[in-house]
Length: 108
Image (cartoon, rainbow, N blue to C red; front, side, top):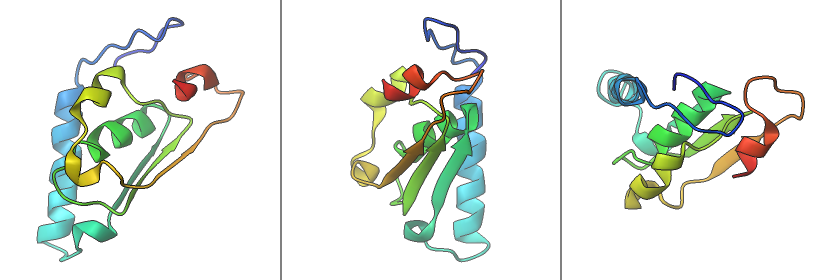
């Protein structure tokens, strides 16, 4: 996500590449370390939280949960939610003094 302006018009340049990188890390956990997907939680802060929510709810493997701190769900993500993680728990917290992601973006 290149930027988030005051109108919350999101630029998704690189989001697809980041999604691939995060899914590769998840696959490494599953394959190399033997951790079952239902024990994996994706999380992040600010734009990293947006990535965690975007990737977590599109993941084709069941996850334990998703955490977004001072984050937002990218608007394009809403149409791409995987049935596998549609009901995966989300912990989302947001402060009121974040200078990058305003709390109103997290409420949308």
